[in-house]
Image (cartoon, rainbow, N blue to C red; front, side, top):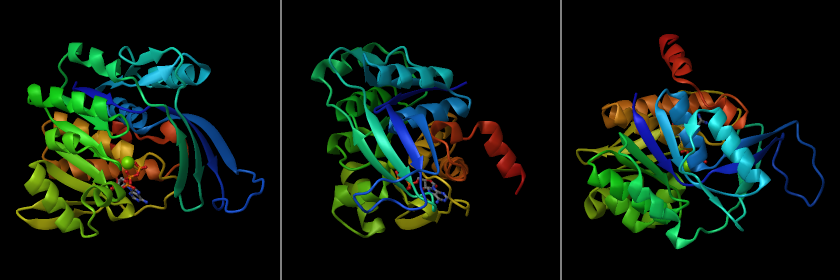
Length: 293
Ligand SMILES: Nc1ncnc2c1ncn2[C@@H]1O[C@H](COP(=O)(O)OP(=O)(O)OP(=O)(O)O)[C@@H](O)[C@H]1O
Ligand SMILES: [Mg+2]
């Protein structure tokens, strides 16, 4: 079984399913709603556990009820939370999430910044088979990706804006969101942007593009690996599931192409159902999907 370390943001998400996203200063009623664990690292760590790997998260919560909820959900999903910081006088992060009839989501997140010394414990962590960091906690991303580099293991950066240049430099694999890549390179053209990452940062890079799948460079040409066509119910956390699956595949020694194909499946299945972290697929569900084709 592979051991994966995931660092970054863990939240409580208050998720509301609506016909359309509110535009007026009025009161609205949701069709369905739920509390769920969330955050890039939180969701990715649950995806890693559901794919059958040993999942350890490095994140922070406050000593409050939201923090207890976040930790409880992660533990219930078999994520190892022993390294999660429990900070006094610090408010746990939470989000309001609205999902419309097409599965598109709108998120308002509150998070406090973390003290500089919050990452100190990371140097005592054991060695993992792969490392994954989001860009919500830059110092932790840099510390995590440095460990990956030191131990010659895959170090994946989930690059959503704003992205740290240093983190891109030291990651072995940078998987940008479309918005993250544009924000980082200031270019609209995917190929030109990915070439900047390959040439100036010497990192393998790709960009996830929602229902259009994933774009990456191979021998100087732009390649696309499509994601399955599905009826999207809820795309919340699709990218996080994708990154968790990608890290697991690299830890298992799969090629980047194989890892992208598998991660596209995992993320697409997640999008077919509403339900926060409970809608993240297991390895068995993904295998069944593959065998049904
Ligand atoms: N509507 C969809 N249909 C099929 N697959 C999807 C869909 N939306 C997302 N995916 C899969 O999930 C991957 C990641 O999605 P996306 O690029 O939207 O992530 P993101 O922009 O980082 O957003 P987030 O992390 O908030 O989900 C895509 O590359 C694709 O494989
Ligand atoms: Mg994302």
